[in-house]
Length: 323
Image 1 (cartoon, rainbow, N blue to C red):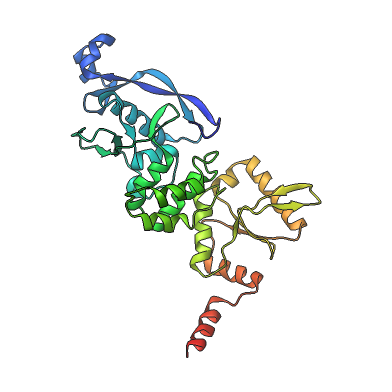
Image 2 (cartoon, rainbow, N blue to C red):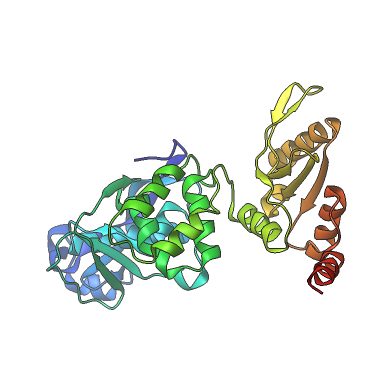
């Protein structure tokens, strides 16, 4: 199962079971004292000088590669298991809160009698386990991973994770929103079903990044109308269709989040300029949002453009109506 063709071959250390080191021509003294063979899990060492190549997504960072290597090591000791919960989510490239961005290995087995007694491994058992092959790694399916990890996330974090699973952050969607909603609603014995369904009500397709999700949820939190994700704007002068991050089509207002990569990549910077020019030529106003944006001022600008009262005025009017 691949989201798209955005992968490349990268080097990883060769994994060796300590009990089978001799078959690789390695003595126990070399294994334990040379500094070349680093311990990755109990009974498993990695040979830092002998490398093997594996398919890897182009967006993968060092932590992704660490997780992938650790999973392969765990599979040597526990064949038949699959990555689950936070480990699967990290390997799918989904955003997680800091407390789950760690080196804990979550594995899942269909065998209810199976046990693992290792501090770094958390075993989860699932009778009807659905396994997928993700960059040559066995993972719990995206839908099962969403259901598995959902009860342990806040509503906001779960929405961000859902947006990533059905959006375009790291390539094509890994699952479909209608199917995800149906499985959560109809599958028997779903833990925290109401929590998961509440998140899915606010999950949107085609989202490109967690920052887009944060920006959209911010508009809702401050009482603004929810903007459309990637509205399609046909620009007659440029003869193309552009899609801002978020937009209010009727009022022709676009919200664009710009992360550091927008400034660091000349190609991205050029595309941003061309997109903004096309929008403005079509009568749209473009508001830029960065990590340093004053959101109170941004809210005032959006309210003014939409013809809405400022929040203090709206609250005052609401209190007058209640009196």
